[in-house]
Length: 454
Ligand code: HEM
Image (cartoon, rainbow, N blue to C red; front, side, top):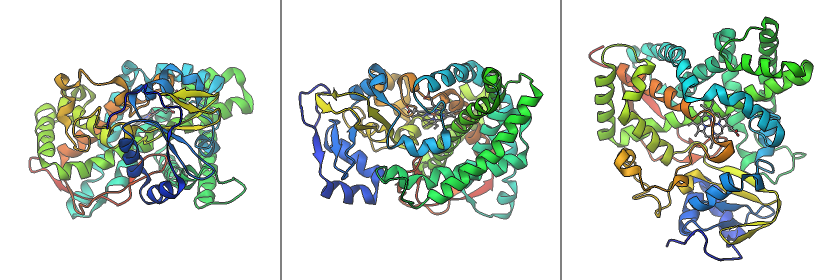
């Protein structure tokens, strides 16, 4: 049943504790989307004991929280606190600290600037993918999630540090971030548990955060000593923060670098991981992608100039971000008493915007559970509610890396599919597991078969 966004209802629907907990313990991501669907997009309060967040999914309500009234819904509180232990005061924060980071970083992530990084990124991606030839030759299977993470990390590290970071160091950094992203899950799911109580994942999280510092600080010191103004993010940050000097300046640079890395790599890698299951389930989509890539790229290496011509691939990516948005929730805290869609929200309440749930609302999406790239054909997109598709968030905090994603992801996919026939060897129903990004619980084991014409 559909409910108009502004319907008057002073008390929210409440999902009581005894019903919420069993549902959310088992498969929280899927259940959250079902709860939103059952409520027809109305605000639902989740009775999770001491913690009673509001689930906000109607696109009009999403617009209020993320854009129109964004200063009333801030990135503080239970969900952000665990992340702050590694991201510090940064672009992923709020207030003046966030604003100054955004001002420095925004020019580095425009479509134009991102395109200028494309050539380097294409080389890095092609190099890391060519290393898979060994697997293709021997028939040794590849763990899809691990491989996507490795390829994406190398590309992201290049954008952040340029030539300043050796491959060896990059390879040491990547697993520490992966540990942070997965070991934080308990804290995200049970944010009301005090930090004086140790929970699963805490020890691994803190050890990984410490190792990240041990790697990143020396890189900052080295870049500072060189004082050159190169293209990469670390140089831009150092130049902007130089005035602060000393420890405080280095800390600021570190916080932003670590935050961007965290925001950029896990999200992209997990999106790419889901793809292999989707292509297995939709051989027609797979075949059409191959056809387009062969036509556009031909025999040669994949270059950034090919990306705008890979029109069908872009549709597949948009649909992938609709069905499996790696940023599955976007949490906020209300700073003052307010209301959303007529539902009263008290100051200090947690508000959960959920792209995963909004993308499955039948009032805004025809056959929402079906993977159909054709819904992104220009003629089919015109009448869509702008806030019904929010994989990158919206408003002042909207993702800085969207353009980068739409260059990087096509480069990875086109490179892989041009080189290999990718077969999923263990197809099964995947369970979305929440962490910093939503990832499949099951491993996706891929067989790479060299394409005949290579
Ligand atoms: C599939 C890929 C990605 C997804 C799904 C994604 C999703 C998001 C979302 C939902 C937000 C909004 C957070 C909020 O409102 O609290 C966000 C913010 C952000 N993203 Fe992404 N992101 C992706 C890739 C990237 C990449 C490649 C980069 C960087 C190079 C990046 C950098 C950032 C940064 C810095 C922010 C914070 C912006 C701010 O608050 O001002 N993201 N991202």
